Image 1: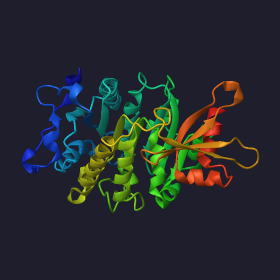
Image 2: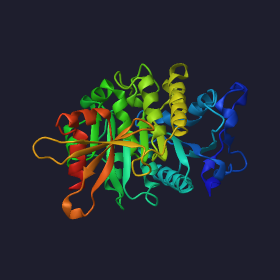
Image 3: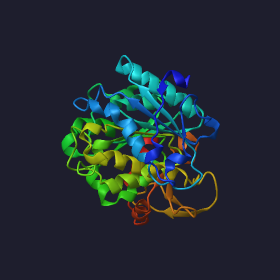
Image 4: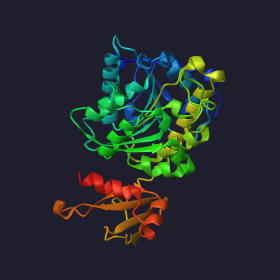
Length: 374
């Protein structure tokens, strides 16, 4: 089935060092690599038709791969297969359907998927692939701007039937690029959005936002243009290259994330291949995080310290858990009494605990209460 959609990537081992990661990877040539011996699959999709003025992003997958396979391997445990790229269909909807079919097959094989676009609109196909495997989908979208009024990938995700979407978390949006109506709609749905400036104050706060995610998509224009020039509509402000690599590592570390999509890189504007090199380094950090996953959750083991905090104004007690394995934090969100369930656990940060220890309700705690009382 996969062969019907994919054309092989041609690796360039003559550009690799002896220690390069490419030597540990399997590549689709005549036959699809053995998926039972694969942890991570990398695919490209060569369609930029919905990226207005930036259609050259269709050529990004191979340029990113060329740089990634040169990088030095983290360890010898890596099991990565490159299945090539999906060619653009007769229509953009055909490309979405092909990405859905390929991603659906691989996700049901319990493989973690890296998708290299292509237009950010392809994230809809990435999302559709979860409908058979996920009941309460959590999606993190890293982008400088979003719009929920027009017919685009984000609106399609929000309105898709069957509805298996539990949460959207938009990271790094820039206020002067986003209409207030779109932010209001997200808030009414109790979805989350976080401004670039707030996240840059402490990039470690991104980690709990990614920890429960099932899917992540990254628009490369969320990286400031000085660090990532490969887009016709780049932004002078954005995450730095270092910050984005740290975010990619957090995404790899997150136990639930099954797919990472990176979109909108246009090689035509990529001075000295700078953006392709940066994205390849983001992939390196994602892979490194993946192989350092802890399966760390208070439900799974007892290596936790429990803290109780009394909040002001007769609010519910806040209960926190700190992992002895990773120093990461979770908090309980109590269900209403009528539900018959005690609470759900949600990732949080040390700063949330500090706020609660002073009797103040953390924003994350409040949003959790609103969502389960919808």
